Length: 145
Length: 196
Ligand SMILES: [Cu+2]
Image (cartoon, rainbow over all chains, first blue to last red; front, top):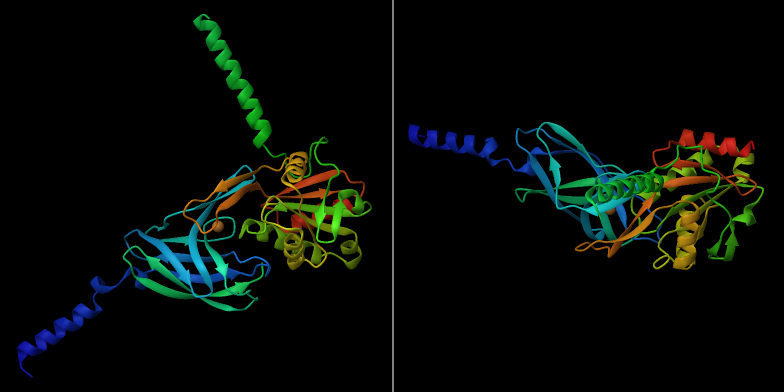
């Protein structure tokens, strides 16, 4: 192998593993994803998880979807002196080097049109979409709480 | 009208508004429900009409919400059920959980019934006409407001107070537990009500 070719190969390898090629979905870590078991008579539920953004750049979760339901929206709650006000939001901000926790009564993934009732322990795949268009699938555990 | 008078009126209006707002939005601390709140009501269950006075002799725990509430209502109801399940069988037999919908338009008696039973087999779901629901909500100072959600899959959500109301064996409102109450708080207030 001549030197020129070897250099070319080496730089190609370097490029492929360089952070320049990492997507937001690759970078953002997702911990403890869960989806809530609701009475079978209703088809709306919520999903919760904690995001960690280890990068120096702010990022955004811009959407989500799942095969088990018709639609997933990003929502938040405003607590106003005991009154809970739920609103749809366009994205969830993931600040650099910080955790962002989705939890009951706060930020959540709102899931509409469950195709069948969930049971505690079920595993549900949820696809998350980030600001650069990259996606990643997490597996949420169904919890009765 | 001279300038001084008009300013005085503005100040008075501002003060009156302030008093009204603080009355309207300040929830009393838990355990100290004002005496004029609460009282009897009759609504519809999957098994026909039911009134609060039907449960006289028991302690009732009432929660106001709506079934398409994905998050806040299940949190509160799972918490209430978990608290009750941690009490002794004798205590449990003397407690009645009630779920009153704030969304009578979508929540039929059967739907609220099934919804309530999911959290605890003994819970009873109640609905009624919009007027009946508004009346009960007013008695218990439950703020509720239908909010359109344009662009969402859900046509509207309902902003609402999230509290558990504990009513004594005599039908009198004893305490209002805020949404942030833990299982332990809930058990403590239920036990206090049982002891009365
Ligand atoms: Cu929501």
